[in-house]
Length: 128
View (cartoon, rainbow, N blue to C red):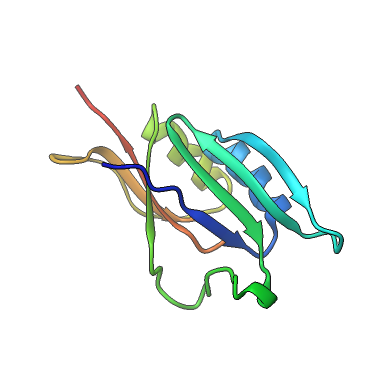
């Protein structure tokens, strides 16, 4: 895979930061830039080698969070050290898994879920 960095939009960036840190084990690698109106204009998070940017909604820039009543247009794939541990935190955080955790012949150990902010994640773990 080549490098592509997603830029997520959420309805509550502060809550999303906390959720991604607590549940996915993310690290904040660039502290939130807070706009004059109090919204988070930019923050960067990482899990292992995966990194993404994120902001609150900005209608004036045409940036909106996913509509939870519709299917996901994009799925994010994230390799983690322990899929089962991530799944335990995800379900402990009130999210239902769409799939897994299970072993897949091509992906290794994997699970799929939609986070509380409407983003669909595939978490995978290499199995040796």
